[in-house]
Image (cartoon, rainbow, N blue to C red; front, side):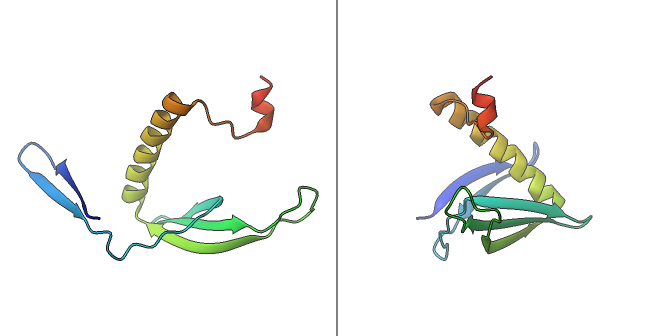
Amino acid sequence: MAKEDKINNGAETTRKVNWDDSNMEAAYANVANVSCTREEVTLLFGTNQTWHAGQKDLTILLSHRIMLSPYAAKRMLMLLDGTIKKYESTFGDIVIDKRQEAE
């Protein structure tokens, strides 16, 4: 399913963006990590392979690495921030640390 968006690149230009998802693959991740250099931001995605809460070591099966320019990463930050705010206004706060629930 192709999606179409219009973006405004300043007062003089509006461009139509065609999102072609014909080659898109879906993946699930319940773990993410981020690192960076001056030239790129690297996102690592994977799945926690540790099934017992009492296990001392965690095993994370990394499945995807996505590298972004710092500019694309900042745009992604802005999109994620807006998405999470909308999610929380609809479904309630997302509690990351269980100790926060007691406060």
